[in-house]
Length: 484
Image (cartoon, rainbow, N blue to C red; front, side, top):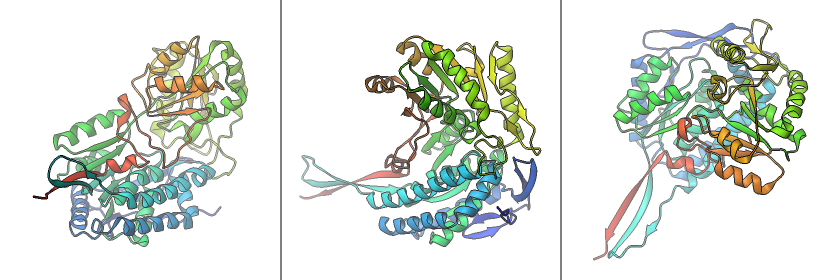
């Protein structure tokens, strides 16, 4: 595969490409080699202000919000078509930027991004209200209206998908957007800005400001011209986002950290369960907020399953993301790699047994870590309780359904959970008791834009995807007309 040519990135404001006001730039690193591949503009407060003003002007002049839902839907359908037409370029960018295996970028990231815009294009047609029956001599009805300017702040692990999960519903509802991608992985956001413009999205409706969280992100979060914040990221930063937005009474959608439990009962189909277990903790090199890094196993099959994992996990292909056979690529950056190393070292100190993995993989100067399985940790271990965000799996036994549920619900997080069982009644029974926004049964990471997801507890609030997503990007207005 020939490398994609990357032009030095500029900010996209008001439909125009521009340098940062102070000329600042930041490096973008290929995590598979640890090498700088390009630079992008580093926005400051003045650049963010220009982007928000551009979005406000575009909203107020009605160039987008004034279109019918059907007209907006047609343009969003065109966005989906352009994503598919440019799938190779987008996949290469995402692979280069994040370190994802190229096969994963094609099958998951690009495909889902196109599906996202297509889904929200259809929902743009359904933004209707209702007539309410009252005892008043009046006609009472409701209508749904866009909020205004949306700040979309996205993380490093799924740049293309998580941008679409915010920009798609925001545009479907008639809002305008200022997107601040993660400073480590900005390339697909800039590429998408051009595709959105080509699809017919008017100038100023979508703006992209690259830069750091403490500068560009903070300026966007605090800007009085922003009407709503859509954020995906860590729980620690999410608390700050919520508190800051709350000062201005801005609505916020927050998809935060996770530390999901995957429960394997004694009646599970172990061959099928092993596939779900491995996918749950190595998918996207473990950099997946809905990953399953905690494995809870019925004691009667605990030793057997550990033996199967000890044989199977070392065989998962780890290596160059450009190789179509690679399943696990590098971590997205040096700091993420060091964090995983620190947690595995802590596991050793806490009495954990390294079943397999537990070390870096020296390859081309990249940020690789071998998929790691750890047994014999207590439930109060930090390695069990905290979000590692890497290819690390802890394994704990349980004796009863009640104990399994208690262990699964014992962390502060509640984004996802899994149940592996052939007992249908048990699957429904356990799913009802798990404190999670989404529960998968006999698989993992089954996602579709028609199915909403989001967290409880420290994993955030609000829902992305599904028709529920549009609730977060609209407000309801009631109109009551006297018939006297």
